Image 1: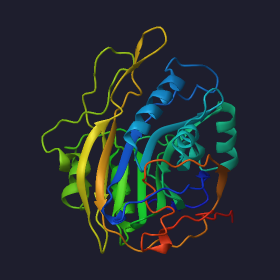
Image 2 (image 1 turned 30 degrees about the vertical axis):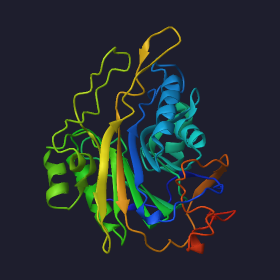
Image 3 (image 1 turned 45 degrees about the vertical axis):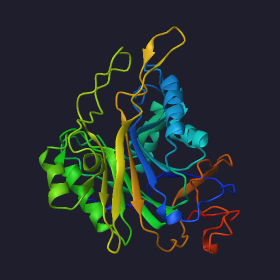
Length: 355
C-alpha cells in the first residue's frame, strides 16, 4: 500500500482576485471542471524539438479554455523543459488561475539527489497539475504502485480548494496503460480522503469505461462517471487523435471526470461534453490539433457549506501570477451585499509558508 509523500516537490502559484459582481444566490451557480491531457514533447525535449508543435498547441488549448470559462482545470502530461519552459505555469498565468504542479519524473528512484540529477541532465519533467479559479489551500502527492514498470513513476495529485460551496477535494492522475493496481489504489485514496463535500477525481486512466477496474469504481465504490451520467449513449471518444490529421481520429474514451459524494452532501451532473476537440492551422496552413487527447468538461451543482480554514501547505514554493480573474465566477469575491461577509475578497486570500 502506497504512502503519502508529503516531502515531494510541488509548485503552487498564487494570485489575488479582483472584485467581481456576484449573483444573489451563489449556491445555485454551477461548477465547471475540465480534464485534459496536454501531450508533452517527449523526455528528450530538453535537448531537441520533437516536432509536436508544443507552443502552437498550447496557444490553441489556451484559447479554447478561455472560451470554456472553467473553474477548475486538471492537466496530465503537464511538462517543464529547457526548450519549452513550464507549460502548466504558462496556462495558469494566461487564465489567471492558482496552480499546483507535481512532476512525477522527480520520483523515479525515490533517491532525491539522484532523481534531481537525472531531471537536471534531461532538462525535462512532467506530471500532473491542477489549476483553479479558487484558492488552493493545500496539496498532497501520492505515489502509485508500479505493478508493470519499476522505473515509470505515476502519482495522484490532490488539491484542496476554498470555494463558495466550502472546501473541495480535487484529484488528478495519469495511470499507466492496463495497470489496474494503480487505478485500484487511486480509488482507495480518494475514498480514504472523502470529506463532507463531494470529491472530484479526474485524469487519463488509459483504459476504457468497460474495464473491470472502472466498472468496480462505479458499481461498488460509488464513483459517478460525469460524462456517462449526462450522455448515456454518446461514445465520447477522447484519445488517439493524430495531431496533424485532417479529420478526427479519436476512437476510445479514456479521460474521465469521476465524482464521489460527500458524507453530508451530494453533487448533480447538469451537463458534460467532450471539449478541446477542434483543430487549428499553422501559419503554412497545416492542420494541427491541440493534443492527441480531447478534453472533457462537466458542469456540476453542489450545495453550499462553510468555508475551509486556511492552513499551511508543506514544501510548496509560491510564485506570483497576474491579478486577473474573469467569469463572474469567483462569484463570492467582493460582494459585500451578498448577505455573507465571509465570502468577500481579501487582499491576501491564502497565506502559505514553507515548513
